[in-house]
Image (cartoon, rainbow, N blue to C red; front, side, top):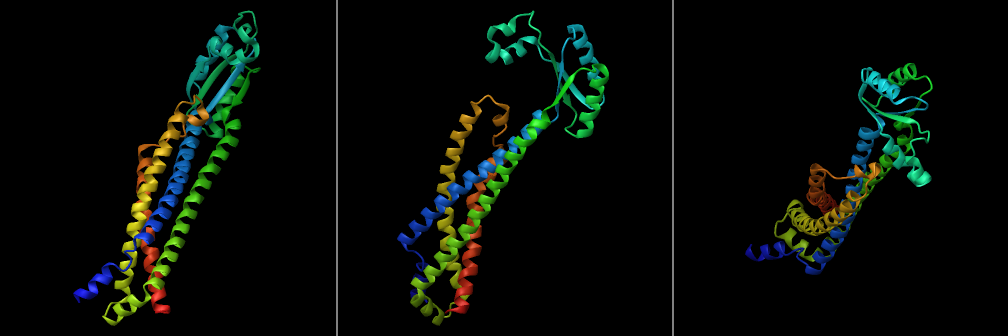
Amino acid sequence: MRGARTPRRNLLDDARRARAMGSVMAVMLFLTVLAAALGLATARAAEGLDRQLAGRLTVQLLGVSDAGVTGIADALRGARGVRDVAVVPRAELAELVRPWLGDAGLDADLPMPAMIDVTLADASDATASVAAARVGELAPGAKIDRSARWVAPIRSFVASLAWLAGGIVLLMAGATAAVVLLAARAGLDTHRDTIDVLHMLGSTDVQLSRLFQRRIALDTLVGGTVGTIAAMIAVLVIARQIAAIDSVLVSGATLAGGDWAVLALLPLLFAGLATVAARVAVLRTLRQVL
């Protein structure tokens, strides 16, 4: 029996095969982690757009005195569904039009509409309608711009990216199962004679499948960990570049602590998937062929 244990233990200990399997899994986990990071970051960005812009109104007032603008802002603060009201300073408006007017925007005699930012308690259409009606009562000539109108197409695009990234992760999981299936069958073909001997010595199909699934799970875990670490380094570099961009549209595309934990768990999840796939493939092949 001691002589039978050695071939059992070394049944799949082919260094060349292990290196190839590990390299493939490293590449697959690298791409999977990048796709998962994209999906998580875009989901965070969509949440950020909803939080920062979807629940906001911009009120433009033309020909209204400073006192009148202040009075309208005070009245809006008491309106139902309004969480915060802020009058945009003229200096900020001048900076917005500087690319087109230059320093002329700083001229106090230049007519410029007053702007009031209204933050709603929620982003529902009902709340926005109530706030807009209140503005209409206070300033019938006011122009109301709801940020959600132009944010909606952007949010839809961002959500599509998140779904696409999720689909890529699922495709990579399916490809991993296919690679494991091919590797298990190749191992069975390579060691067919050894398996026949182990069968004659009393080994069962379940015992043989454990040898394959343990070897494949180890290769997947080692290669996947290397690929995951490389991908997380790449994600960190990209995250720093995104953080340097001063834009509401991309500032929310960041990963939280829980997101990093999910990425770190991917090698374990794929190793588990590879174990199950190897067990199913080996048992089915042994029962049908050997």
